[in-house]
Length: 256
Image 1 (cartoon, rainbow, N blue to C red):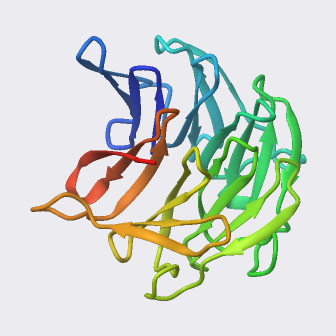
Image 2 (image 1 turned 90 degrees about the vertical axis):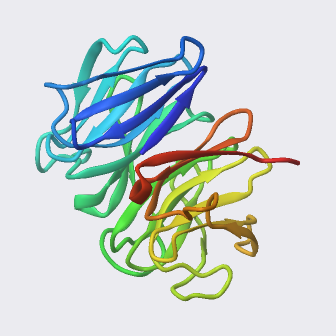
């Protein structure tokens, strides 16, 4: 997974159990988190530059300063309302100033404040109905506070408001425009267009808010995308795609 803040690009690297940082201003690459992270998966950054990383083995969210200093970690003990099990993805919500954690083990979204205090859950457990999840993979929040969750098994996206009220489903399993094979990373641009990586068809598809397909692309020749996974759109509408199969990051610019 991937996140961007200022001139720094943060990429989760599970093979070295670290966060790799690309500092564009200083033209340096470094990493941190080794010895603290066991199996990092999701990453997000708040408005002040603090980094939040979900660790699926530790069942925790681990928090760092922009410098890489470990600040604190949080989770909930088993059986409590805010328990997280195998948290796979996380998103900072700019409207509420809270953290939305995709709790894969419990098939739900758990919402915390920035200090790690439990607020509420979104979702009704495992299933294919409204507010239910089968294999949720990625979560993101847009500038209006809406919450988007991809479900790899069910081949669709669910959209909620910031309080967790269901709004709509987008997409369905299939190979036509607007359908998905294995939707993974998701992000939303400043015009509220929705971008989704599809790991089955090795494409990035763009939808409008009603789910109608707008465009798709397959990467820069001579190598097209291979297992596109993480996805992030910064405040300048630059699109960062983790092209996992090719072990690279591709960056595009959305032109209005």
